[in-house]
Image (cartoon, rainbow, N blue to C red):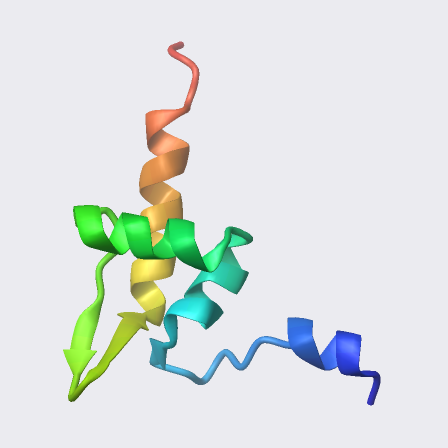
Length: 73
C-alpha cells in the first residue's frame, strides 16, 4: 500500500484518538488541536500520562462549528 494513502486511512473502530489523529480528522495542525483542547472546545481525556480525544468529540466539535457559522435565515 502506498505510504501517502495509508496516512489518510481512517480506522473508524477507534474510540479514543491521539491528538494527532483528531487533528488529521479535523484537517488542522496538532498545535491548533492542542489549543482547542486547552480551551475546552474539544473534549479530551487523560489516559495515564497520555491525552486522548474521544472519536465522537471530534464529530461534536465539527457540529458546533457548523452551527456557529450557519447563516441566519
